[in-house]
Image (cartoon, rainbow, N blue to C red):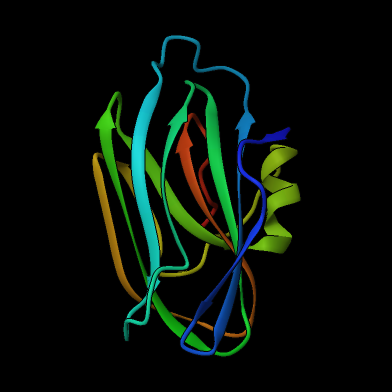
Length: 146
């Protein structure tokens, strides 16, 4: 697993986000092409972005952008495919990342799941203080609660 960006600190309305984008290779999905996607994660009440980036994801892989919240915050995210196949996108508690990488069952944050889409717009997901990640999948990773 490698990181294509260094972790950075972002401050948004008293909410501190620490993001690290990681591309992770999966297995299977050999016929699936590379996807280029642009995404943004931000608080609903404004104040700036927790993360705003463009990423290339090989078939059978996914991108993970981790962030932390210091207080309960209502967030939204948008993922748009610029080129390539449709994607799945969802938010998870950071504790679920090990299960995702191991190919084990996991659950995503309720109300945050978009499957097989060229555009994912999720608005108004309330998250308590803690560590979370946006997962953008170009493979076969799917939450049990999808």
